[in-house]
Image (cartoon, rainbow, N blue to C red; front, side, top):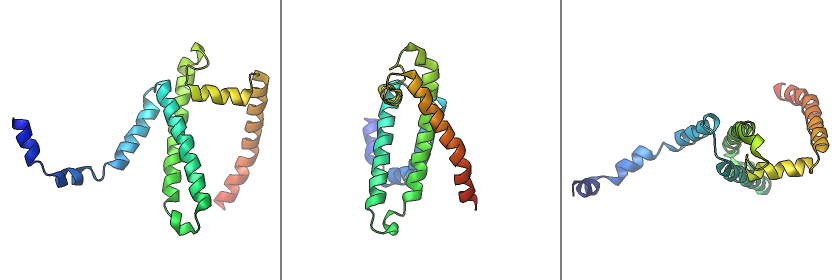
Length: 150
């Protein structure tokens, strides 16, 4: 009886004012939790799928925007997506290193499918693809940074 009386006296505007600025700190705490705490493979699959969908939405909005002013929030969206990807990379690396010996799908179905596509069932192909990516990154990264820093 006392709880219902308290809830009837509670002002909804006070609750809205209290929670209006909590979005960014909650997202930041969730991302930090992804980096610090081990995540189950199912949650990694969901977040990887969300990340891929978010990337597609960002690309489509950027391509279909008529004026740059219409997508003025682009730097913030790109920053949030990049931080989410970095947190996912750390979380997935931890899961692969901890549970990778248990089988191909121990780290999640999305990671297993991506690995199957990249290596095509042959580890030699995977090593060659990794070497090519490593060479491309090591050769082009200094050039990109040099242009960016000028």
